[in-house]
Image (cartoon, rainbow, N blue to C red; front, side):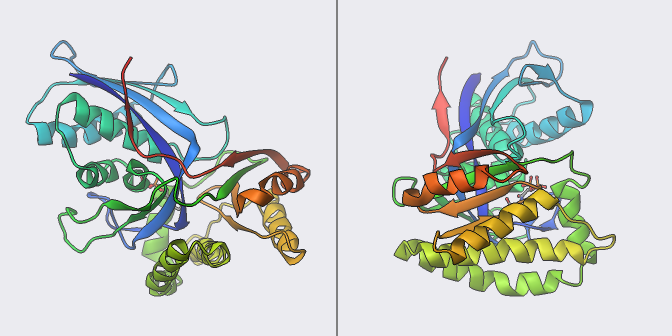
Length: 326
Ligand code: 2P0
């Protein structure tokens, strides 16, 4: 009745930004990401008839009632699958450098889905596990697999065909992903609220959706051909389009700080000088920079030299779900 799992974070190159069904976590569009080797969550789940409610210890701390409610709602999905009502004790540790700005919800819910389903001996396939993790946090569906991963939006209303699949594994193509941490305060709009507001109010949202299938098709061609330039150009443009949709929302919002622009401009400037790199940005001020491994050291030095950059952490494609024993 207990299990431990490790899941890594992922960075989307084709972004997920908006739900068509917020109960089932069904996205408006398919998305594509790289699972990263450096940042991960380890989660232990114990089910016992002795427990009177679910509990969660995150990095050694008790969490808010709101967090517990989310975890309980998620565990209810797992309990339903297993036909049990037993409560669980969840102990989770994030191995993400402080303030690295990686949403821990992707690795967090992927690890929780894996550990909870294993503890209840559900024996799910990878795609079933991905569809389960999706119901904790959309991006978690992609962290089930290593390497380059696509989350297919699916067509069905019950969500059974909305899950991730692996395109190529983490050993098939090495790319450097530099996580550039900038000076920033806490963010004022969560990604969950931000994407909903964008879907509901931004006139640019239709334009975003209209270009996604083409972006996805072309980036998959780039991955197949190991064409870094094509991959980087599509990823950078896709990220900028996603951020543009928020500027049209009511009320408008954005996640960039001046330091975010410093990094974006530096990457463009270095590219013009012949040092090839591209950036992507999630719902926060930090920037992830893609380059080829032969340029990673030089890139790291150039970015770390910017006054507004606090840290640069180098990542590479990483593995999917791993089960651990104590
Ligand atoms: C992504 N993001 O594709 C996009 C790009 C942020 C920007 O997935 O509401 O934490 O839990 O499904 O997965 C962040 O949103 O949102 C995210 P929920 P999630 O990685």
